Length: 72
Image (cartoon, rainbow, N blue to C red; front, side, top):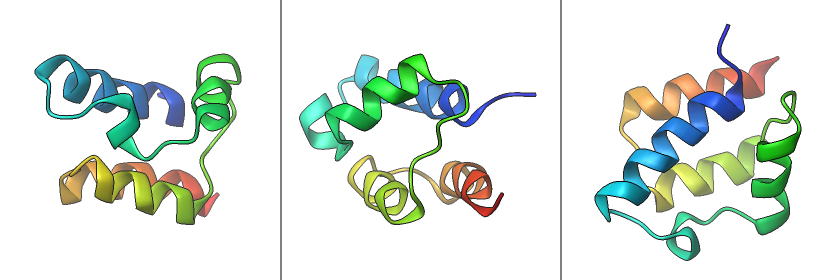
């Protein structure tokens, strides 16, 4: 089963590589990003995730998939 971090980082990497966003535009806190990279169980708080989804211009499908992880 794919973790939140794996799913999030796939979207993040695709948007970074395409030039759609930069890290500073993503809205993600540096500490949260570090935790995503080292803690496989870490999930952003719902409010923080909603902000990041907006800043990264995620599709409704991407947003829905990630927000599911905050419901656990």
